Length: 100
Image 1 (tube, one colour):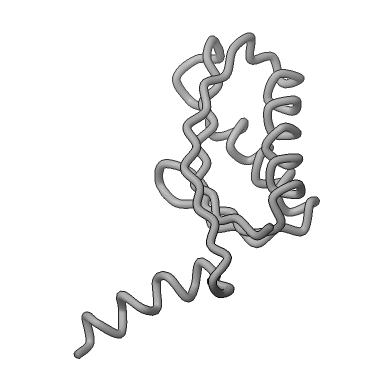
Image 2 (cartoon, one colour):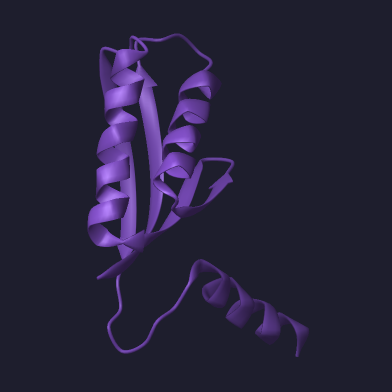
């Protein structure tokens, strides 16, 4: 099953800056070959359910390996079975409405 996820991984106990941890998660997603787009407060990811959730698990493992004793993650996700829809499709449908 395809899924689109909005993921925000926040390491706790590592100080104020978390950009090295975010970069590590981005590398995990790239290595997994998943379509993803980072934004100011998280990352959108699309792909097959098991692949996406495997990568999210790997993000947690990597961030813990970097020394974070705790992680809090916010996750929003959506699936649909009536038709295929990508992140680009969702954004483009709104853009078309704004242009009309």
